[in-house]
Length: 265
Image 1 (cartoon, rainbow, N blue to C red):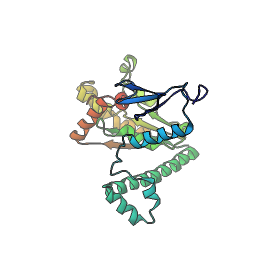
Image 2: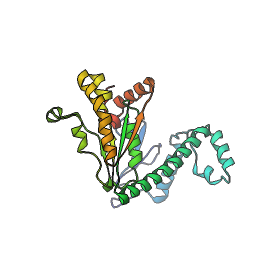
Image 3: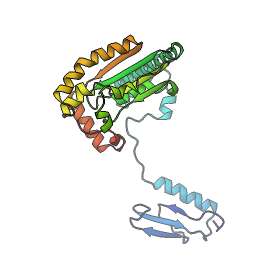
Image 4: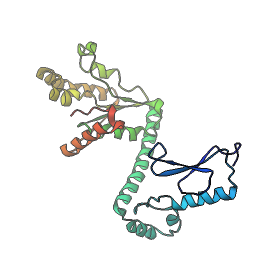
């Protein structure tokens, strides 16, 4: 190996070759002793191949977990029965796999139906508002993502309003939601909605009892007017147990991916 060849080659074996210089310790190159093939050393291709072969043979081998399916094992399968037997031999839950596969099939079917519905909405000029309400961490946002995964973004919107501004707090409560209602040929997904005043705000003290009572009187009439005007209104309520909710809150505290979500109940 000359200067025009590779700069250095490390091996993890002990060799008597003078062109190999040991480098021991726990530095950036890991634990154990490393040997460096110097750039100006003359090592033949045969010697280098031998060194690499010995290094591979002497390297630490990480055992493959029992529940990992290998490509060779899958290529030898000829029937679903053999596949199930392989899963059981690997201690993989067959029931869990079947539920996952069924979920994916059902999800694909429903997403196709959603695409058809969106085309119908566009062609007929319908206005559709879909409300997602429920307890914190109940899965509203994740469900909306699955709803819109294959929809045309030019004919749909997701509305997730922040807390009211000072100006909005002086307006009629429902006014801030009216501007986000669907246009003809459009579907709007509300990740929480005007029902904040009926669910979240009273619990957290963000509205007075009088404001709550006023909302409860007005909201049936408000929705009645929407439907009379042709808006298709669909409501979903998501609920989970307190134990699952607390587990999800804890996951959000420790998971950087979930740090964009509120961790407060």
